[in-house]
Amino acid sequence: MTTIGVDFRFKTMIVMDKIVKIQVWDTAGQERYRSITNAYYKGAEGILIVFDLTNEESFKNIKTWIKEVTSFTGQDVIILCLGNKMDIKNEINHDIIEQFKKETNLEIYNVSAKTGEGIENAFIHIIELLIKKNLNKKNKPKIEINNNTTNNMNNNNKIEKKKESCC
Image (cartoon, rainbow, N blue to C red; front, side):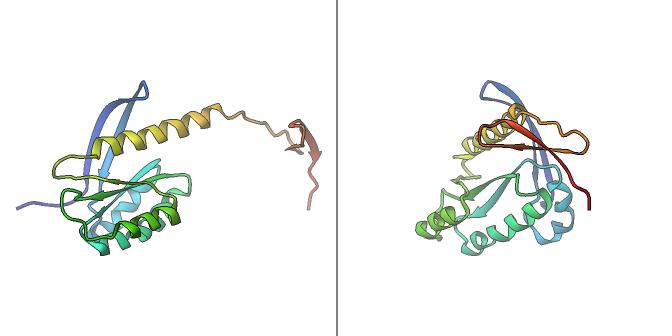
């Protein structure tokens, strides 16, 4: 007897000359685990949404998963979609997938959990995106705001200070 539930994996990888430790939580997407998946979203920086390439209903559910994920993580989370079972003849029309990619601006990797094809590339890609995102956060200059003043940039990229008015 097999039990399907929340699976946790921890792995260290080297991507872009950086040592990266990743935690992967597989919530299996099953309705009976829906109440606990929200806890896994909190603090997540990257989400992989997996759908079944042989099941159009699975593909249609991606938008629902995206709404749920962003409601708990915010819009800043990196989402990558994985179309699983690329080793089997697809039922989902390629044009429908391409239209979805244009509408959502999401990347979709075709993978096979059975053969392992495409999985490492998808993980490396999302990790690269996360590294770049975090490097950009670190490199952004911070502008301090003093009491009773607000900093605004003018056309010459100089900081102007304005008095804030009250009430």
